[in-house]
Length: 452
Image (cartoon, rainbow, N blue to C red; front, side):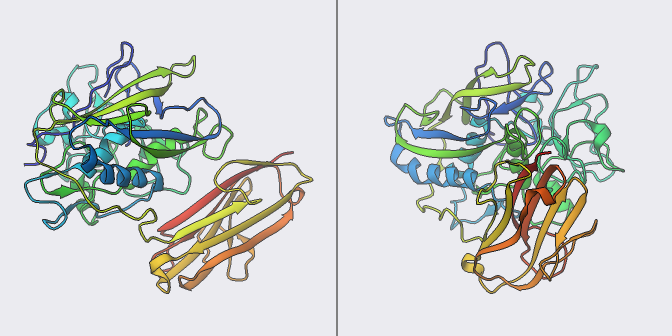
């Protein structure tokens, strides 16, 4: 039965707070709206470099090195996947726990992500722990009803007066799909923002993926793993939760307080932001974190340090193969004035240049649809086949054909004064098929503001 085995155990220290993605660390009935950030965030736009080390005197220190580096690369890539659950004896021995999958989960805790499900901290047993994360309501108990579909953690669950902690996609309540904009304008905890016909926030549980007709998939941050199982890649929900935090204090993507996160392997050392080791102080695995409030509003917490511990009494499998950083997937890039990702402010006298690039990697020649969308103060625009931006509420295809090596292509070049003042987000997306549907299999976005 699912979760009838040692699960991920979260331990932490934080002043007088106790912990509980979809959900952030340090969230509980007293801190329902808290957003937790990785070490180093100070409320300003910057690249956060968080170091990860292996305790040099720990048992299994050498064996940990490759899977730790793989897990670091996975978080740095933030690539959404489906079908990330695998049971393959050639990959992980049937009786063993996959260290790489578990350390990927624990690293998520150490950068601020909690469990999307109720998990072991709820005190519940068995499959009941897979309901979406909440606090107890006024009646001081969890109300657990899986609804008409009988699938725990889906959108038709009936949860009584339980208080939702999970951030969900307001458009579709689907934790396996990412919208173009990922911040607190497109995600919510308020059940009043659920789409029509939904009663509660869905979490990225494997049973929900099967209900939706997807290959078996589950959030890395979902608590619980079977022997012989590998779950080494992220799903949309893992990425969305981190991206919500990365949208900064204002909760808006593409503004001046956004940040990017880079985990950096520091080798065998005790002097890192996150240190990993084996000891007998935990039941299975745990990330212990300390943190402090960043703002007087007491709704943003920054982690100060983290320590990940593994119990040596289990049969751990250590992946001996270092994964390629790009994982062979196409790399999609877009720049505004030769800058990527971060918000850019343009005065009317400035020049505005947009350029895109595509490195197809091993997928060169594969069929694909190309899309370029601009979200503007005066509606959505799409680059059409004539390389002209046209106004449309429905997607407009730029090109349909094979994936090609596109080193650098300027798609817009104009004085900023030709555009109305306001905020803009431009996305270059490439689908992994030619069905003329805006799937966004691989994509990248830039944000800029035209000043009055």
